[in-house]
Image 1 (cartoon, rainbow, N blue to C red):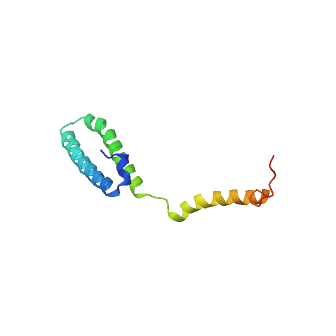
Image 2 (cartoon, rainbow, N blue to C red; image 1 turned 90 degrees about the vertical axis):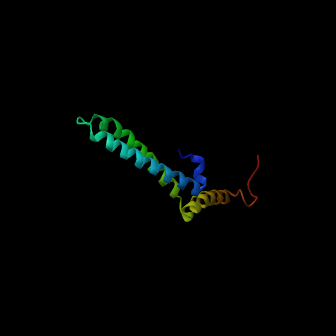
Image 3 (cartoon, helix red, strand yellow; image 1 turned 45 degrees about the vertical axis):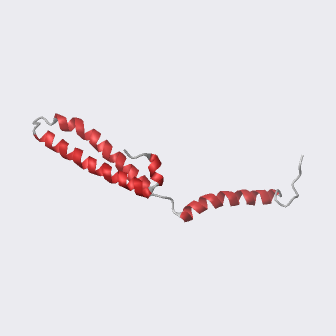
Length: 102
């Protein structure tokens, strides 16, 4: 199982995701084989939701591994709030030494 701690190490996380995909394919083939003999398809109704959930979790982890915030957006998130504070402080006279202390 992939630890979230491994997400910092992209190569190790990708190796774990590849292993998870291999296990999913193996489980999927076992479900197909076992459900082929069931005429009521009850086993499929029970197993498929759990199997889909497992695949969704792995997909979400893969997306989280490869998604990142583009650096221009990240820098704007850091700079813009800081600039706003500086502008407000300059407008109030905090930075030029004319601020009154009580």
